[in-house]
Length: 68
Image 1 (spheres, rainbow, N blue to C red):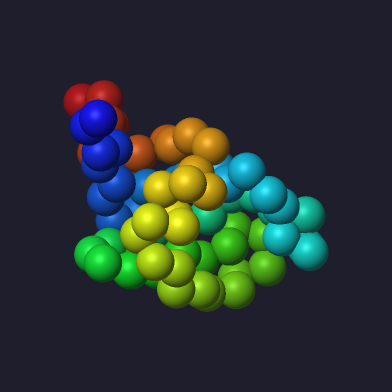
Image 2 (cartoon, rainbow, N blue to C red; image 1 turned 45 degrees about the horizontal axis):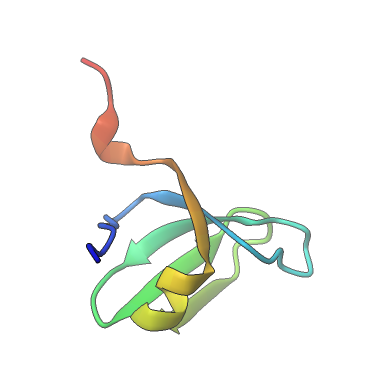
């Protein structure tokens, strides 16, 4: 099974919402752990890759797919 690729500044939607009601997060760090910033309240969290990959529902808008 192929692992999905995530990049810095990707906007991802997680399966469960935060207490602020937002499901959208910006990826600000990648590696063995992922750093995420909530787009609703600005809270920053670190989450292990394994948990992150399970929690992601979809990539909303990756920065690297800009049209010229």
